[in-house]
Length: 212
Image (cartoon, rainbow, N blue to C red; front, top):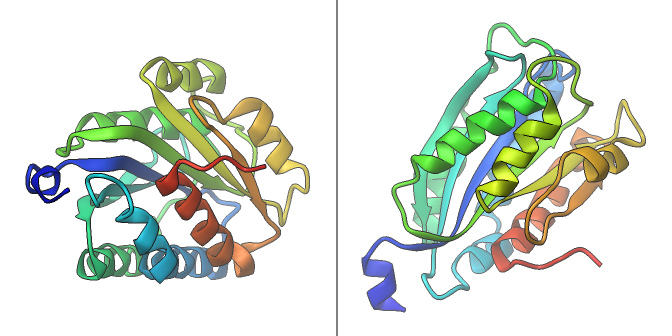
């Protein structure tokens, strides 16, 4: 395991693709970014991140909203210990809300996440895009072709649906968003419960577990 780790390899290259469209207000944004940071720092998540042969996960994050509204807020970090997790969590916790939140262009967000994965500096055994959001697509490039582009590139797309505005959003994610090996959709009822759901999701993604 030490030899693999020295080469900078990771068991998983994971992009967090985070909805910051107009449906996410300032209070919800604060709950979401704090929830993400707390999840990344969680001991169970760190144990999952370091449980594979390489002992590490590569993590990056972007905010997405309107068709041209994608912003990388966490450049690639190799997380192999608590110090690495703390750095990544701190950057997400301090990320400012974009000044001009727009509509919900999930397809554009997926394509931006794929471009970010293509720039991952770490050799990775698995590639995953973790989409979190609270609404259906209503703008931008068609979702189905964007989704297929990622699936064709052996990228798994998972979804975390925040169901505070659309109670059936997880079902919509399952039917229209997720794809690739082992893909799954999860639901959280609101942003207050976001951190707990994200912790579970990150553990499952890191360990390659399916939702029963």
